[in-house]
Length: 186
Image (cartoon, rainbow, N blue to C red; front, side, top):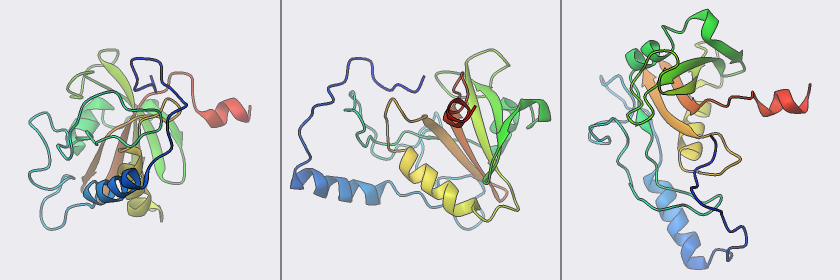
């Protein structure tokens, strides 16, 4: 978990060239995430997802270099899917709480990210916004925009997101041994 690489990564790569920097600036504009407007309730807008629900913006393959910006393949979840994955956000599934809101443990299929029964598939952490939070939309957009593009062994992987019924949700891989904060400040 937390590792997007199948092979050893060379940490001594060449520094980016001016051409790489231009490509980076151009690609950062095409991967921006803005919640939809109008009557559509779930995030992502029309035509931006495949039949599996994953975003199709800039799909690509290959093994990314350490800390490299990769194309986004985030799943756009519905609120109903996340309710099913977390057993309707039951209090006994709460992992923690912060300024953004509560974090719930859920289970999804490891290939399709469809909700699954407890213990089947992979565990996920679902970060659900607090309606009273002042951080809300801006923090949610920043996390989707940036964490959705990065792949690094030291970053928790963002699997998908949901924006529905004025609720902002983020779905991360579940880290078995707790948070970095717990390890540093025990």
